Amino acid sequence: MVNPAHARQLGIVQMLRTRTHVPARELADRFGVTDRTIYRDITTLTSHGIPIQATPGAAGGYRLAPEDPLDPLTLDSDQAMRLYVLGFLDPPTAGSTTEDRGRAAGVSSTVQEVMRRLAQRIHFDTADWYWRDEGSGHLPVLRTAMLTGTALEVTFRTDDGGQETTLLKPYGVVWKAGEWHMVAARAAGPPQRHRLNLVDRLQPTDLTFAYPEDFTVSQWWTAAMEDYGKGDIRVELHVTPAARAELLRLSLKSNSQIHEHDDNSVTIVLYVDRWEWLIPLVTSYGPDVTVTEPPALREAITAQLRRALAAYDTSQAAGPAPPAGLPHDDSRLRSTHGRHPGA
Image (tube, rainbow, N blue to C red; front, side, top):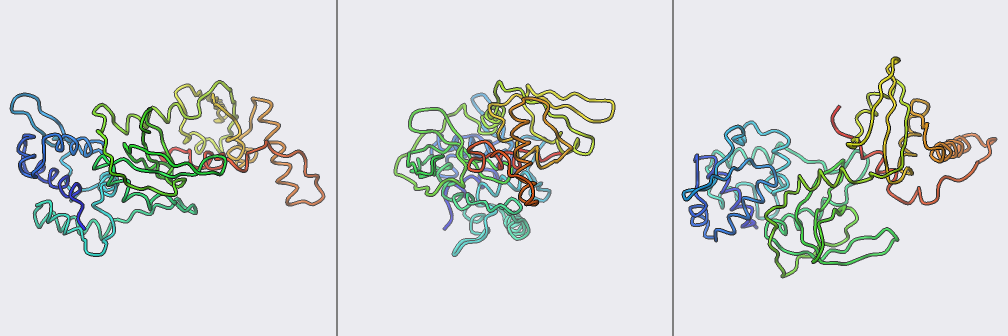
């Protein structure tokens, strides 16, 4: 079944591709909806990176940014991801094809053929190497709720092993380091991020919400990631030349420091809220990354390495246990998934 919101939004993009300027009223008349629905459609498209510009004045309307005409014949991976999230590159389902969506949106047969080829030749593997992403199965429900402004009843797992069910207003979805995250707000309160692999159930409700006009998911996410994990605990790492390139790919914060040395080694200074997540990261590099501060982290890493050695050498004493809670929290995921994808 063709999703009306998806089809309408594809039609809006197609009209903007073939015209230098389209008034909002003309778009509303073309698709039989209100001006406010068109405003929300434009907000949704721009939040996913579609380069739409508003033109002010009595004869104002919308146009595609001239420096990025969104030519599907030269579609890059970032644009492909946006189309995937919007639902145009999903695998065909029973009774629905890419051509169906294009036809319902009134696009030309040429563009329909391009979309068919894209759906045939672009695949999104939502598993991060050996990790299975449990959240991608929620995307169709979440996507529809975002595009229609529908509140969701969400049941997710809590840190103590229990479950919580609450009503959420979905504002956006983010793919970060092998996992999907939902950005959503409760009935009262600011937006928060929720890992979809911790969500057991997403159920649409009959309640709707007005998408905040001043909210952009990319800007919110950038600010949230800058704040995440920051604190007053100073951690100093000495990195040899062998591990330098890899460690400098970490997503460092604005208050992090990098000190270069003559032998091509570096010292990285971090200010974190807790240092436990650094244990699996540092130990994975062996002697190429060592902690010089704080002493408690050095002791915890020493204990971890002794226990690892004891697992291979039965003549070694097991040594003290690692910090309580380390095997049961997200420390390992943070250490392996928190790296910047670029060199």
